[in-house]
Amino acid sequence: MTVAQETPNLTFDCETGNYHTFCPISCVAWLYQKIEDSFFLVIGTKTCGYFLQNAMGVMIFAEPRYAMAELEESDISAQLNDYDELKRLCLQIKRDRNPSVIVFIGTCTTEIIKMDLEGFSPRLEEEIGIPIVVARANGLDYAFTQGEDTVLAAMANRCPSEPPAPTKEKEEDTAAATRFQKLLNLGLKKKEEAPPVATEQKEHHPLILFGSLPDPVAANLEHELKKQGVKVSGWLPTKLYTELPVVQEGYYVAGVNPFLSRTATTLMRRRKCKLVGAPFPIGPDGTRAWVEKICSVLDIEPQGLAEREAQIWESLEDYLQLIRGKSVFFMGDNLLEISLARFLIRCGMTVAEIGIPYMDKRYQKAELDFLARTCQEMGAPIPKIVEKPDNYNQIQRINALQPDLVITGMAHANPLEARGINTKWSVEFTFAQIHGFTNARDILELVTRPLRRNTNLKDLGWDKLVKEEAAV
Ligand code: SF4
Image 1 (cartoon, rainbow, N blue to C red):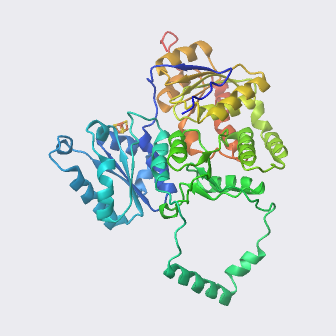
Image 2 (tube, helix red, strand yellow):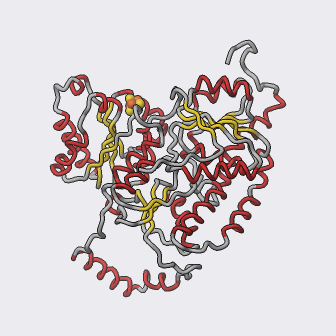
Image 3 (tube, protein in one colour):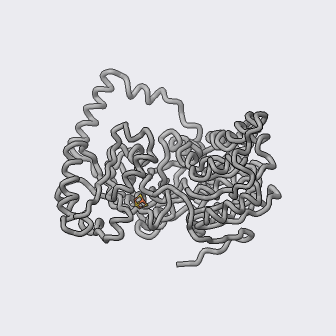
C-alpha cells in the first residue's frame, strides 16, 4: 500500500467526533427506491426503528420495501436462535414481496452482540433461494451517506465476472419479439428513425460508474460522457439487482460521489479494477473536471467542455450575484462538503471551515487538489478542513466568525436562525439532484434560499429571537 501524498496548502484538523449526523441505516430510504427489486431488512432495535420512521417522513406510508427485524431481549441474551428467527422473516418477505435480493443491514446492536450475519447468510441464501447481501451500516463505524458505501461495497462483490449466457428461453423470447415487431413495423422502425448520436463511440476500455443517483441524473451524466465518445458499460447499483454490471479485471471504475471510498477500495482490491481518481461531478467546474479526467484516462480528447462550462456559469449569474463575497461555514455531516465547498468558492464565496465526518485523502485526492487550486485561482483564503468535528466547539467558532451562511443539520438550524445566523439544512443536498452541468442551478437554489428569505423578511426586524444575554 502506498501512502497518499498530502495535498499541499490545505490544513487538516481532527476533533472529538461529537457531532450530529444521520445514522447510516438511512441509506435504505434511497437505495430501495433505486434498486427496484430489492428488500432491505434492518436488524436492530427500537432505537433504529424510531430513527427510520421519523427521518423518512411521509415515505413510510408508501409501503416501502424495507423493514425492521426488531431484536428483543431474548435475541440479545441468545435464548433465541438468530438463524431460525431470520429465516422465518426472510421466508415471510419472500412470500409477501418476492424480491430478487434481500439486503441485511447490520446495526450497532448486531455489532455489539457479535451476530454473525456474514457467517450464516450463505446458508440462509441457499435455503430460501434468494441472494442475501450483508452491509454493516451501523452508527458505531459510519456516518450517514457512508451507509450507501457499505451496501455498494458488498454489492461490488456480487457483480458477475462474465456476461450471462443467453438461455434458450430468452433467445426464443427475443426472436418472437422481433417477429412481432416486424409484423407491426413498430419497434424496429423507431430504431431506424432515431437520430444518430452526435459523436461516434470510440474504442476504449470498459468503464463502470459507481454511486446511486436518481435515474434522470445518471442518464444525464451518461449523456455527457457519450458526447465525448465515452461509453458507460454499467452502473453500480443498477435499477434491478439481477442486472448488476459485469466487472472484470482491468476495467476502469469512476465514482460519482465523495463518500464511496470503501466501494472504490473493493473494486480495486477484490475486483482488480482501475480507479479513475477525479473530482466529483458536482457543479459545472466539477463536472467538467470529472469528464476531462475520464477522457484523459481513456485516451480521448475532450471536445467543447470549456464552452459548455462557461455557458452554465453564465446562466447562473443571477444566483452568483447573491452569494459573491459571502462567507459559508460547513458544520459537516454528509461527506459532500469538500465538493460543495469547492463549487461555492468557485462561485465567489469564502469558506471558513469545512467540517466533514470522515476524510479519505486517497479517494478524495483529486477533489482536494482541485479545492486547493480553486482557492488559488479565486484568491480565496484556504479553508480549514475539520474531520470528526465537535459541534460544541464549532458553535463557538460560528459565534466568533458570524458567517453569512451555515450549512448544518436540523439540530442546530433553528437555534442558529434564532440568533440571526442564516442556515441551510445539509440533508437536502443529499436528496436534491446536484450532479452534472444542468443541476448546478439546483445547488444554488438551495444555497441562496435562506439568504433570499431572510432578506425579504429583514424589514420586520425579527432577526434575533433570543435574549441578548443567552449564551450560544
Ligand atoms: S446509531 Fe446504531 S442504534 Fe442508532 S439508529 Fe443507527 S444503527 Fe440503530
